[in-house]
Image (tube, rainbow, N blue to C red; front, top):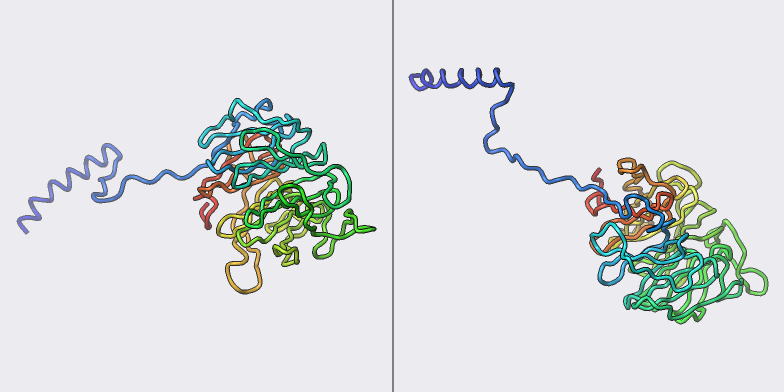
Length: 338
């Protein structure tokens, strides 16, 4: 009791100080430091058209550099890791309208030139090394080649041949190996369709670690998935703006865990789907997150056309309508974090 009487004046004094200064007593032992929340980053934040004008396909080399198809400027731009502005040096190599872009493990660049209806292969030094195909609907030729993906384990590339409504499978030297899609007259490509395994304007394309092929069937507003041999596995999405549906999706990528990222272009968003093949059951296409960029400085996403996941797991989005690249850190796209 005596100790309480001695303590009482001290407590009253503390209460008086708090009332006079409008402060609270410190919470002794509490952790007063919080880890900063991850935030998106922007490459070419000013949307400078001289640096990027309608960025499209993109991919990373083995050192972590980002290569971007700069469509209107008819060249490839390179960003060093951590840099917001691209290198001064550009890769041109006679491109007319570069769209899709992918790199192999030797840092060779494969870029679709829709203006020339060809695939350009550029070596690691930035010099044009080969030209593949020409305009046409015979196997090995193209009509508006769009997305391109590299299947390193099988030493081949896959090309979304937009106006031929097919996916062509080629060796790195351009030898035709096969195709996915309907066959036209006399074995030529060029027949569109809505059934399973048929396309109406395939655009984005990706390959996962198991060799499965993912295709943005743009005009059918869906994504189709195939075995490495070309056999149909599944399709998901319908025309619409609700989660899980699309309005002319144009870009796609898959991360190491099997999550699927789809550029839902005309809905101006990117939808992230949980890995559909995580279990031995039928694949399910559950939306993990819808990214609109509403929190971004400079405004939300506008007509995103391509995406890529960096070696560290960050999501890079070609925000085509805003002439910039938006980077969402791994923590913002993994799981259900806001």
